[in-house]
Image 1 (cartoon, rainbow, N blue to C red):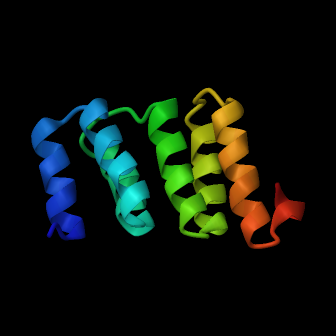
Image 2 (cartoon, rainbow, N blue to C red):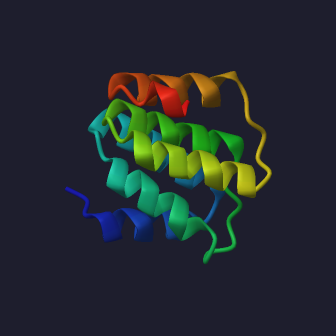
Length: 106
């Protein structure tokens, strides 16, 4: 069993966007939105650029876990980073808000 810090450390060993993306995607099936968020935050200090795939995976993880507010924070970060927003991004965000009656915010 990986802890949050050991998951981040394992990604740092790989030190690439693909490694982080794979770990964040795994968080979705494991319901680990906190770890997914921590992984996104760990990328910048390691000078690894989050991609659209990175953000989409993290937003989808939050959506699956009912964490619409964190998903919205990630969307804002995505816009701040000037990442490409697409259909996957908006569908995951709408779904996250819809699940908790936060649809007015979407």
